[in-house]
Image (tube, rainbow, N blue to C red):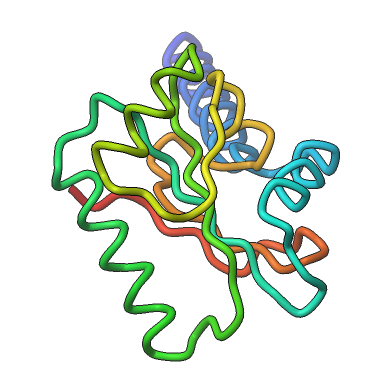
Length: 145
């Protein structure tokens, strides 16, 4: 009977550790990196920054669904003044150019070396984040596909 209690405590402890790690995922914002994005996008004081996480290997659906969501947010006046930046997960600037050409991208774009999600406090499933000028997270949207 004593071993069962000990085993139960161990399982409970492991569960709580996993929950704590998941709860802390995406908890902090690297202000230096956010300032870099503000500079890239020429973000003004009264504007919001929409960050779109992308990769060159994404299928058309992985691009279209988040873009439709962004257009809906802007169209429905949830976000009035905003700048849009795509963070493209790749290793070379050439791949950013390929992304820009492939999707006829007319907004801001930056290369993500694999650290952008962590720097912005995004989870693994996050596809869109919206920040105000000061870096306050206004909205985070996870992939549903």
